[in-house]
Structures are given as C-alpha cells and as structure tokens.
Amino acid sequence: MVIDRIVAVVGEHRILQSDVETQYLQNRAQGIPMPGDPKCSVLEDYLSQKLLVNQAKIDSVEVSEGTVEMELNGRLDYFINMIGSQQALEEYFGKSIIQIKEDMRQSVRESLLMRQMHGNITKDVRVTPSEVKNYYNSLARDSIPFIDSKIQISQVVMYPEVTVEAIFATKQKLLDLRKRILNGEKFSTLAVLYSEGPSAPKGGEIGFMGKGELDPAYAKAAFSLKEGGISTIVESSFGYHIIQLIERREDRVNTRHILMKPEIDPEAIVATRRKLDSIATLIRTDTIDFDLAARIYSQDRNSAVNGGVVVNPLNNTTEFEMDDLQPAEFVALRDLNVGEITDAFKAEDENGKEVYKIILLQNRTRPHRANLKDDYKVLQEMALERKKDEAIQTWLDEKIEETYVKIDNSFAGCAFHKKAWLKN
Image (tube, rainbow, N blue to C red; front, top):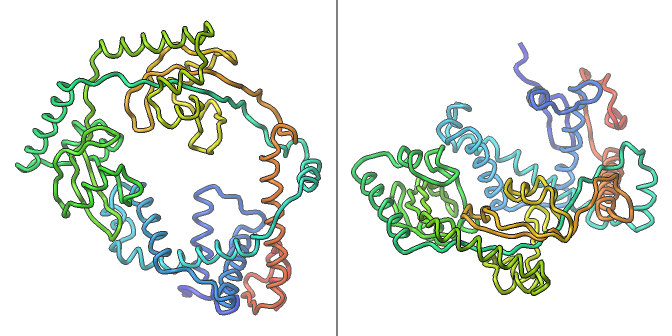
C-alpha cells in the first residue's frame, strides 16, 4: 500500500499526494468551487503557490521569524477561540500546542512568502480612468455589482450620570467575588454567573491578545500578573473588572475576567433624554445648527470634533449600510427622511456602555446597479484587482517556462488552466 508519494515538483519544492487529498477534502467541506476535475484544480493551485515560493528563494525574498511567529500565534488564537480552549484544540489534533505550532510553521512561512511575492509583482500596477471606464463597459449587466442603500449620519451622544453610590456598590460586588475566588471557588464559574461582558458564556476567557488590542488599563493589569494570579479591581473604558491571567506567551496574554457596570439611576436617564430632546427641538426650530450642537453637547469625542459626523469603523468612510447599524439605530432611522432628526433613544457605545443619542439623517442613497458617476471607487477597485490578477497570470506564464516542473503521470490527463504545466 502506498502511504504517500510525490505527485509534482516545482523547482526545489515537492507536492505530496497527501497535500492534494487534504486540501480537496477541506475545499469540499467548505463548499469551495473546484472547476473541472476537483483534484486537478487543487494541484494547479499548489503548482502556482510553489512557483511563487520557489521564485521567492531565487529573488532572496525573506520573512522574519518574528513575522512568522506573529502569524502563527494569530492563527492558533483563532483556532482556539473557534474550538473553545487550548486543551480542546490539542485533543482534536492529538498533539501538544507546541507540536501543532511546528507543524504549521512551514506552511505559514510559505503563505507569507507568497503574499510578499504577490505584492512585489503587482506593486506598480495602476489603472487609469479610461481603463476603469473600459472595464465597466465590458461587464455584462448581471456582473455589475448591486450597491445597497447607504446613509450618512451625524449624532449628539450623552451618557447618563453614574452616581458615586452605584460605583461603590459595583466595586463591592467585585471585591466579594474576588474573595470567593481566593477562597477556592472557580473564576470561570463565577464569570458565567455574574460577568456582564460578552465573554461570560466562555467563563470570561477572551483569548490571546497583545497590549495594543486591549484597553490600556486592562492591559497594564493583565501583563503585571503571574499565571493564575487575580488582579484587584481595574477600571477600564468598558466598566470595572477583576482579571485572571491564564497564560502568557511573550508579548501576548490569555486572560479571563468578570466585568460589571454600575447601575444607572432611572432619574438620570430621564434627565438625559429630556436634555437631548430639548437640543433636538432647538435644532428643528433653527435656533442652533446640528454641527454646533454636537461640538458643544456631544460626549462622544470622535464624532463631536467633526460636528457630529459619524465615521464607519468597518470602512473608514462616512457611509453606512443599514445592516452596519446597531438594532436601536436601525429602528430609529429606518422611516426617517433626509434632514430629519430622531427623538432621543437608548443605544450602546463601542465599549458596550449605555448611551442616549439623537441622530440627523444627512443623506440616503437608493439601491442601484453600480455606475461610473456614483460608484467610481468601487469600480476602480474592481478594475485594479482584475489588472493585478492579469499581471500575476502573465508572471506565472513566464516563470513556468523558466522553472523545472515535473508532474506525475497520474495527473497527466488534467485539463489545467495553464497547459504549460505539462511541458515536461
């Protein structure tokens, strides 16, 4: 019985039967299209990848060990978060996390080399306005992207006042929980029962993160702990926490926490709503411009400095699709006309804290097929991607002719997209 064998060689790089079989099964499980003979399609993808890696070595293209390590850690964190825990991942693979990491290292390094080669090949590719126009005119109507309705909004945001008594009560609850943990109760169990953060169902565990990914106060406390250690109360932009360090890997930590937020007094909510509704009335009667009202009254610093204009964090533009909005914002805006202002309503800020706001609907576009006048940037990006792909294909055609390529006879009947693969 043949356990494994070499089915192709590209330069100095081999492709194994097991590589093709494994990728074929993964593609099928994920529903990835594989035109023609699926295993031939998988092999051709591998041939292109190995050609890029082979040329990277010839061109002395390198990636640092630090970059490989960072990418490895990111992928492992993703897998751990998907499967639930490091222990579950180790049980799934039947290997220790160190062995899993080493098994992935070469694949990750090659992936980074391919990414860098792609960048090198396409770095000078540009598209002119005439090329964008020609690209658009070449598209069949069904291939022209459909652009959903987009809106632009401005807001005035206010936080209800939190009393000193409410803060004290929250801290006392956390101190009581910390005492219970130190007396032997499981942190993860208490996190499930009491934490107000989205990680509560996972026992408060948030996965491996670097300092830049965490709230500064949270990061400072987490990185000062020893493994298994419990922090004192930490105040962050999300609320108040106690934190446990699960594991530290160089500049990344895996922690669990219990998050609590002080209860807001109902009278403070009423007062905040009244103030916002009063501001809305002043704007509607032209007593004050929305822009100025936002600069004076809004407690959201990011939008206040822009006169209330909100930037979409998903694309760094001022345009939102309705699905980008929080449910409360969606409800408040769905029947609003351009130029109108909502009444005050409850929402959440980016840290999950309770806020109240009024929103001005500045603009709303209609759903439509993309056109050069309204959607030039979308079409420009599409034209650029196609031109980059053409540059890659031209590069592959040239390098196939220059590089030693040998394919096993079992794949000799494959109808490859590039027939030159079978030149030998």
